Image 1 (cartoon, rainbow, N blue to C red):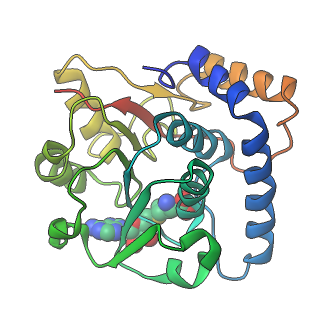
Image 2: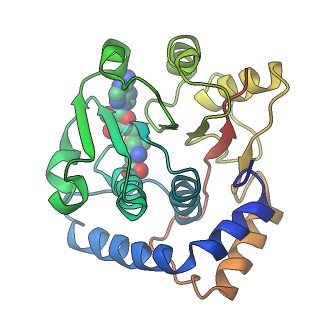
Length: 233
Ligand SMILES: C[S@@+](CC[C@H](N)C(=O)[O-])C[C@H]1O[C@@H](n2cnc3c(N)ncnc32)[C@H](O)[C@@H]1O
């Protein structure tokens, strides 16, 4: 599947270079304008890969668990806007995101549900075509979603999980350790642009971005701890 190894991610950077450049500028401005009320979490590579995967696979429905102040939400919505199709269903215990997401991005394409996702599974859309997870980062939360949420997502669906590789290994008892163990038991792989886990891929992507004149950072984070994988069975 394209987008789950360095070579095909670089192809996606080339294919969507111009719209991505515009979204990067918009996001930089969004970050600057909302600095009083928004702390962004996703780093540039992982936010951009998320955008590129949504552009390439054109999901009808995207589910986001963990919006915080809306940084990932606006990246996801920008991709759906640029696709001209698709809806985002976002979930968070807190609703700070609602005031931050611009109306022109939310339009008819965004549904936000406030509350613990563990009590809101019935608010999920019928099908999930892309699952984005950036909520609680402990093992018990991961075990909950591996048991209750993952079975609702079809094989092959793109999934991304944040905060896995801050170092070369996921720490014991964390979400990362639980998800990596789950993938390993199924013989399934993942892709990461994490500087700590895969410095070679990280560097290759930064070089590719330089060649495409996309090197100027949107924000300062460099760790990119997210993993990406097609849902295994
Ligand atoms: C790391 S932040 C998300 C950052 C955001 N994705 C970004 O890019 O800026 C984690 C968020 O997950 C939310 N969260 C934690 N546990 C949750 C749960 N059980 N259900 C829904 N949201 C949850 C928290 O309220 C918090 O806003």
